[in-house]
Length: 397
Image (cartoon, rainbow, N blue to C red; front, top):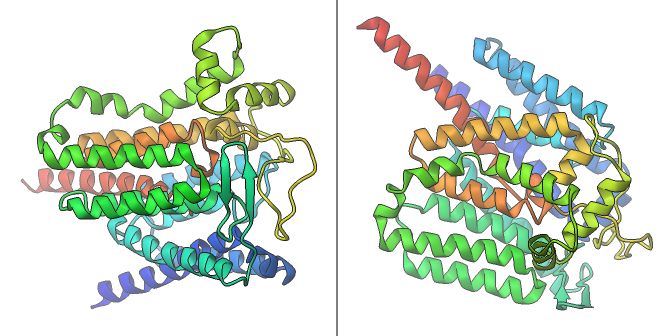
């Protein structure tokens, strides 16, 4: 009874904190940010409550295992590096990802995924319906790629990223029992969002996962064979990180394959080459004032020249520094190795698609657009726990 009570209190504190963070972060990406911003320190107060709840939860535990103490030390080093990078500590800060990845270690990822889907859908519905009803602006712009509807968000890509995250979470939860009609519904929803927001690259990644899921459903053996491919996927984040650094730092328009990649990524490579020429990739990072296509809380676009690093790996390296970024990549690679050895190949596929998507989109570094970061902490903790149980059983024999 005491254990059940402790677990329930732990979950109550975690879901209260995580739920507040997730909901208000999504709302802050919409034009509701105006009301949050106009209330002065409202968002900061919410973020403080989120942190306090997690601190209370961890302090209440009182006793930490040796492995958890090591994890706390690693997180401490990452937080110190984060503070040294002079990056802002708003709701987009890496500090919240580190906090929830650690604090969620004793909760099932499937449970967190279900919670995230429900809360993300509620926030998404509130924003879109409010935009359609005229409560908040529903911006429409005539871009070169077509007419883009913002659907109440401050940037056209935001709604596509939220639906993409929900889709991936749903596919993971239903990985063993997905039905054709469910795949069709998911395709239709993502296609509608694509047509409204013209988010081509995000739509392509989702369609790729839907297609792979359909193939696995028809040919289940695909998920258990070709282990060499899955072994390579373990290094997907490391590979994409190194490839991003190489091609962007050494970009030459005269090199045909580089020029081709630059064209299909809508000139992102050339722009980021210019950025890192201006701001060197530093060990500890720097505070850069970005100027992108997103709108402010009142629907105004920045008048400064466009300067934004869309590649997640470059964006993180510039903001947090190479040392922090390499440490994060190492932890993720360790988690992918565990997924491989546990034969959780579907998670490995999803994480590898996220790694590839990160080459063209930096939004994946944020927890409210990518819930799968939490799976990293959970799988590492579970691996340690299983190892301890195995050693205990061996001693008992």
